[in-house]
Image (cartoon, rainbow, N blue to C red; front, top):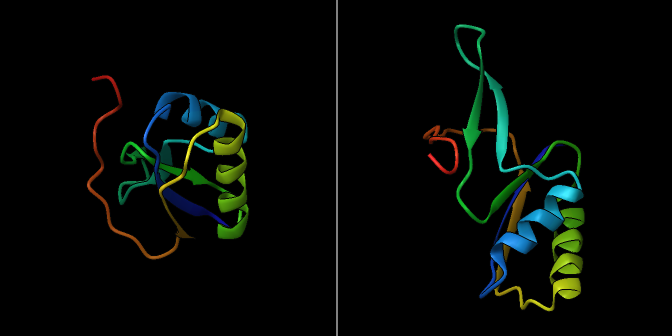
Length: 94
């Protein structure tokens, strides 16, 4: 089951995201559009996607990564990626 998770941390944003990438999280969601063309949804800065984790696993992963990096996680929400709408966004760094 796919999930998205969003979080707030006061510092070390880049380090945390790299730690989450190492656990299989991504900052984009693959999608096939109405014309059957592959696209990517670019998520907001502190939101990640995982194709096969539960919301509880995402919370545990992010808490563990924050702990390892000595970061306080201020806020967190995770939910099943199911019914959605999006503004596709642009690739990061563009």
